[in-house]
Image (cartoon, rainbow, N blue to C red; front, side, top):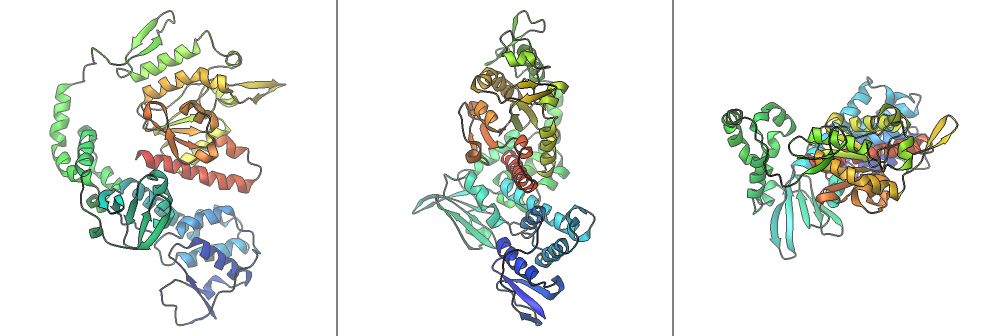
Length: 485
């Protein structure tokens, strides 16, 4: 007897989970099930409805549920059966199955989840709104063609990012509406429902042309990251053919001109200690920001008014990363290992941060990392040095140096890892959990994206909580990356 399962939607994870729980309780094997979405025609041999879901009888790893939430959004019609088969195996003896990366079912689910995440990233990066005047006022409308069933899952991203706008996203399968208060979903449409251009299109084209660097043009890499299927929805891509044709000539002209001479009358400079530490030089940050960072580091390390705890530290721990890094991560302060090695984010929390960056597909070597407080504040207890949280005075002392560090690196987004970093960047005491996943105003108008410090994950009492919060932290990093792409 085959059990027919009808799900209410193509990515109805909650419904799938409840039905799968009932099937497991009834010991119905995967090969005796048939999965469909509402509107499909069940198979000829489907003769029984699924049993009602009761109390869970099996312990399901949190990692499976997190994987399933993404994989179920894939367009593969076998995804429901594949997920149930994997769940059956995990709960019937193969408890370590999720760690076997070479298993065909696990490899396939991981690939599906990765494809869904990539599709969501494309939607965040390549969706463009057009302005339409309606009776209710100005509405922003966009057309997008996702490869997978991600519309409902990603609607929240656009609410958080464009909460103050009235907008509609039209896709072939679903239409998402935001009226400033709540989300509504409707039937799909087509790209002709969205205007081809509006008054903002010239701005997009002018901006893209202004930032295009002909000397760094790599058509293969560009097409891999931004396939042509998205071009017709992005006004700036109309400039790409012309810019590519002109690139060889413009690059040759750049070489012929040579390096741009420094501005003889800089509008803004940074006062720094000279190398000898006995005077002050005016070093133009735009002229040599790497040298300016080194000078700033020397200035802070040689200060005569350092807090008392800074004098007990082994050394000052300054930031690391490339000039111009789009993401600028700010933690609380160095830990024990960072204090001994003189480098930020190399202790247990730093290693967890590196792993999360990899899982979020955020290039770690392209980000800048530093701390709000540059010295290890601790309480000595025998052979151990116990971390002591910085107070408001500590944060205020280091804040001018942090702001100058930000100005020299010139990032596009500041990421506050924890409450200390959030206070240092905004100058205000804001609740991290309420601000998490959103952006607030930072120094010089730069946006600040708030999330937890990775050490928070290490302090959680049980493994399940750690896994749950780690997944949320990875998603936060992925969101931050999406804001600068």
